[in-house]
Length: 144
Image (tube, rainbow, N blue to C red; front, top):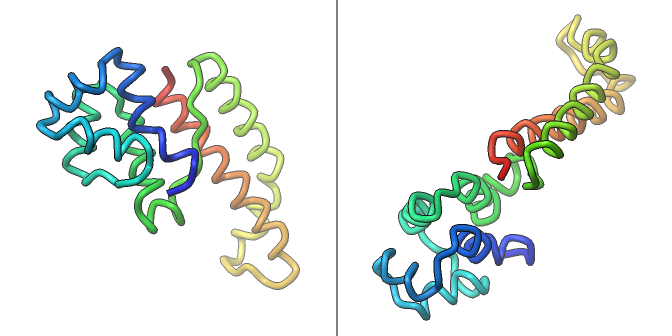
């Protein structure tokens, strides 16, 4: 698990203002097991993470857990940067503008439904921008 993902469980618990001992008790796991999760030595099961999400009132944790702990999540879920609501909204507005700037290329590529060799670079940029916009939208939903 990468360094950024190792502490998502600890961050969620600390943001909830719950001690490690209390969280372990409420999750019906040992403090040592919770410590292993929080230090990236073990990956909690989806069932445990669901309990953490409920206990910590942190829906973003479910997303980050899937993104960090599964190959499907690593490959297909866009990266999100969690921040305050105002910054998240501004980032989303910026990403929307970036997608608007490539709109003509999207239309041109989409007209024939084929990405030919001359359009591959434009398509790569378009998918990058759309991915960034999707991540920014999710960051707004999960804003703290």
